Image (cartoon, rainbow over all chains, first blue to last red; front, side, top):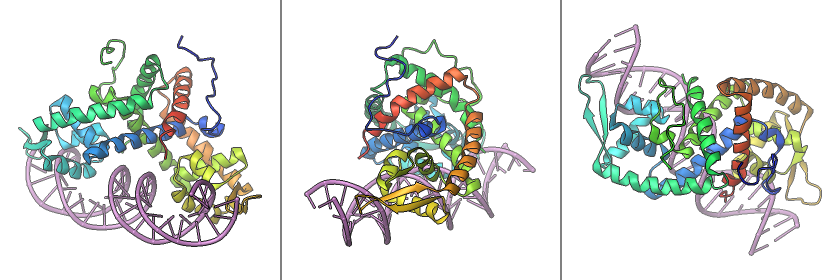
Length: 161
Length: 161
DNA sequence: TATTGTTATACTCTATAACTATA
DNA sequence: TATAGTTATAGAGTATAACAATA
């Protein structure tokens, strides 16, 4: 039982949003997701990077290395648009393109030490912004939201052509 | 808190997404919201309209009439970009601009009968798409997600300048 | 034939600056 | 001065078509 949830708090009146739009989960997802992305992008301007770059670095931090096709799928960026993203990161020495062993068509994109350090600073900044944005939710509620969105992610990706 | 990993199912192996990105609620929100918006936009192509137009019509359906400034805030579109949106809707006879009683600076944008009928068809189509996208969630889970996002909406809008 | 990476292109979305007419 | 609407414009995001090298 989290504090103060009497079923319908309704919050305040000023940030009023019509019930017809609030009733649409699709609208809520797009809207909240859009605002989240906007804040995220705003934070990354300090590094002159965009969300796609951050996503690539995060994936590489965990996987060590990945092909551009994999990066595109995992980060949610089209392979055509990923080229310039990797170009920029490579130009700054944050990642390197290496030949993929066993398949000369592929690159093996890998995080450099400099990239790992820079990513650490970016994570700290973005985590702070995220925490502020989610401050209206309790830890339990954040966990619940996380669980629901995690299950939704594979489902919404299914339609990707 | 990266310590809570044991209580999550995460059995969806094929559409694998790195834990480092899944752990970020901001990333999940942006990503799922983006996919939701993409599907929504795809559905609206049958009407040659975009999500912003749908949002305006939905707001007007509930409020009857609103100024462009109000529409911009409620739908989540910048006032500058809303001009062309209302222009298109007005050009198709779905809404009308009327003088605002008491303030000659404002317009009172109102839904026409044709707009109301067209919106009904759009809602049916978008609801169907939304239902398919959310099919992995139970009714209770959808309600929970809806509640969490509804509380998050006013919070994320707070940073709007 | 299918896949990986790539370029060029176009269209949408969003943000910055500045103007007008009213308040 | 402040606000509602507007215009022009530039940047970022995304989508379409086509291609070379390799599997």
